[in-house]
Amino acid sequence: MGTVAAIGAWTDVGGFALAGVEVLAAEDPDTVRRVWEGLPGTVGLVILTVSAAETLGAAVTEPDPSGPLTVVMPR
Image (cartoon, rainbow, N blue to C red; front, top):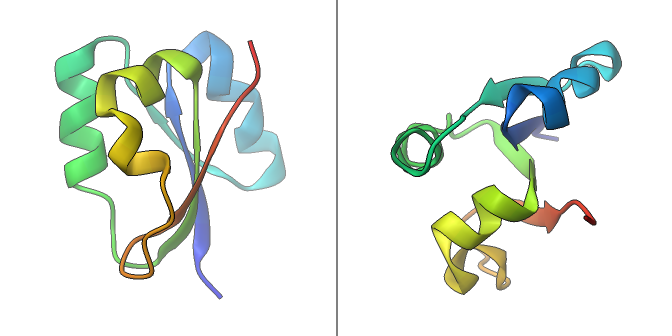
């Protein structure tokens, strides 16, 4: 089983650290892209803020057996 990561602004994802989620704070689109591209292969689930998901595009949230499962936090 893989680990869980959360990508987005610290104020939106920081609390997930309390549940053992690897929080990858990304405050701007360039950082979101860099963090996404640098995800370790052990990550099985990625929680994205709406802003991070919009930055990465729809391809990231579509099912892909070769990548991690992604979910987008509600607004």
